[in-house]
Image (cartoon, rainbow, N blue to C red; front, side, top):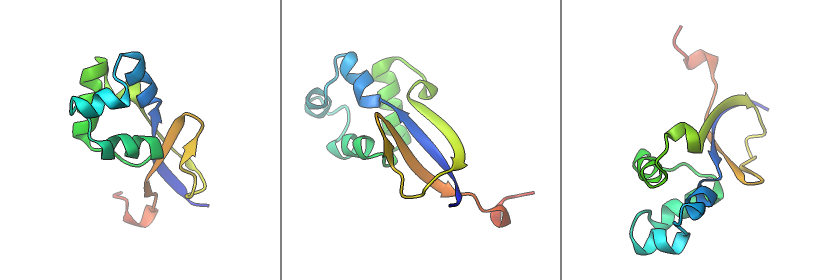
Length: 98
């Protein structure tokens, strides 16, 4: 296994639903596109514009909905329970600046 850097979604859709924004409302009001909703569900990366929209709807900061960790994980691991783990980039000491 190689060390990977990942972003963890902290139950974004659950927090949006609790704030009154279910997925139908998000789509109908064009707050978030279906592709972004599906990306969150499947633990795939989303844009900073989407993160900005979510933070605006929830009146929160990115750290309230995202977490950054770096650890040794199976690169195939994508979702654990309600927390999505997104592989960002493998750590490669040969390409890191000194």
